[in-house]
Image: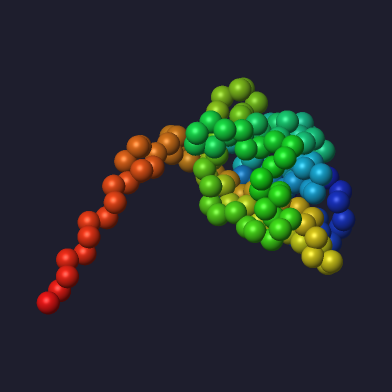
Length: 152
């Protein structure tokens, strides 16, 4: 069973449902405090739940995107978008492990809303992405498509 801090018992039950997986799962409250951290998250990121629960996610993970830009920070774009009900797509991030090593993760993020439709939690479900998904110049700037020939 995953370890979680105590937000609210019914919402904690909802969060607990995300942990029935072999993937890492982290839940963060509206103040960006970690409230859930499961065993696969411990294995991937080398932090025990007791070390991170109640701490700010950005202070622990220091996540960057494919270009090296810090994305896990106090002014988290995922939180800002989720508050506007704009949900993120599947993403690649490099998170900092306890050892300091960067680990590329594939991440799915879910927003849980309160009964009055306010953002309560973000849940990150993630797994090892292997090597950096850094794209080549050809992938970032593909050539324009060939014009379609007219058919007569």
